[in-house]
Image (cartoon, rainbow over all chains, first blue to last red; front, side):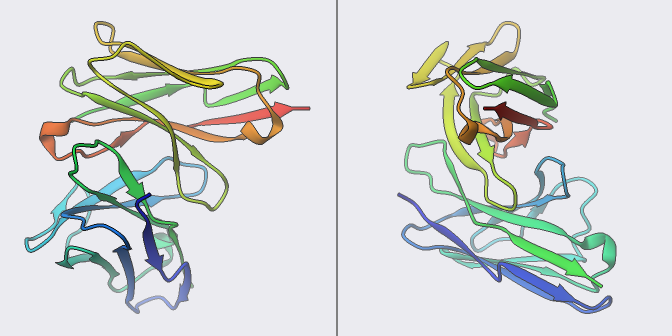
Length: 116
Length: 113
């Protein structure tokens, strides 16, 4: 089956610093990846769609200058949370979509970000 | 944009009983409806999905039904077991619109032994 990894699995950073999260498709090429944020006891909220070789598409209300997304290759997308604040503390999950005739998205294991 | 509502938010059932979770969606163009199970701190796991050209799909103890006219779909879990305890999310997407998933609010299911 298709495998998506994320790194790191958890990170603690100080307020004002930046944090980069990596999302990799390990055994398939992903032209499109998605980034979600999930607060405790809440649902997954789509932040942005990451397309290889082009700019990411952000959902309404998501600050593109704060959440920088780079999809530099068909197997790697990165999310950088810039000038992090405590309210950015959340569970960040990526997913990858492989257009192989299937509708399914493959989720990464998530990254727990805590900003102190 | 698409809006997905999910009910109930919590569900407690006795082991062996059935559990039913219902979702409604707003965009009639949605054509893919997956259901995910998420355990605490883990990634969502796809448990079953249905496409708009199918009215019902079953996989062992899990079944999903879709009513396109009413724009609602349901998850049915029969013979529940304690390991079914988790949070379940429904979602909807449009294949021709980038496959973005819109999630329901989630249902916390507790199966009491």
